[in-house]
Image 1 (cartoon, rainbow, N blue to C red):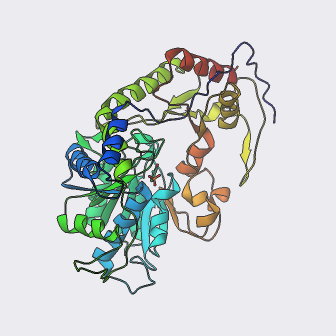
Image 2: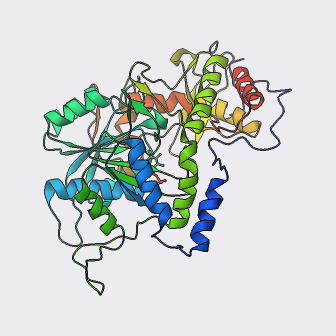
Length: 429
Ligand SMILES: *Cc1c(COP(=O)(O)O)cnc(C)c1O
């Protein structure tokens, strides 16, 4: 498995070019220092209050609750949905226990794990090729197979809004609640509205590699004050209004620290600057790679403006060299004029830059191998690793096979990016 391509003359970067690294601006230290000096070194304080107001206003949701991470936000979001629909479970049981829940398939596992935390059974909906998000056609099929489903979790992959109108129409028809995972898409819009405002319960993330970061952190967004209050209470151990520690509900330690909130507070004013830089990175790749048999991760220009968090490419089918992935290993055969994600990622890595494969679809993950999967053509069924047998591949498996994430750091210089583009070109030499 050795590439036969010639990368000679392309110097490795002395300092690594990252996939997506934090970009600090200075105000972060000011807010952290304020917290320190006033001794608000806790999960209460002015920074938390400020970012909740700012994020809610920016996204256009009435309420935001700052939490320890996006995964915690998603957990409490699906818990709210579960409790609303199925009622409060006994202690030791989840709100979604034994219930099927539809969710995006090609995404980070943090989108779907919270369903399992609540005892639910994720059923994965295949991906469409127009935005690499949940396929409404497959979703409609899924409701034929599982008409009882009442919760749908949708992600906006790599900062590109999915087919929100179509998905919402289907969910409304089936009386299903949408939980929106906007962890990757903070700042992206669909028909002029921010992602994170379309579901009943919505989440964003401030993880270290997201478009703005607190080093960690996340938020739940909702228009319902009772739900916002419930999340605030749950996330601080569900303490009741009594002078001692009184508990009537299960609690969590999910609240954001006021120190972390200080970093987020310093970052939010730079969200649009970061988006503009990321867009420029995306457009330079698109222009620089236009003569190769590849295309960029697509979006609907008429309806949406992505935040361009990660730039990705997908190799044309005819230009793929042979590549075989096992559960942990991969082999490919280098071939003139053709390439594959493994070869391109190795080439990028050889010059000290960081790319990575696109998210491996959840229906292909061993942990979820017994779970249902519904593609456009109908049920992929549970029970087996159906992707191995299906021909042609479902869209998710196909995009995973041919796609990869490019170094998308907003601090990457034009010169650095030109070098990355050059090494990708050599892969097709
Ligand atoms: C990052 C991410 C999350 C989780 O956010 P954390 O803050 O890391 O817990 C959830 N969903 C998606 C799609 C993500 O990319």
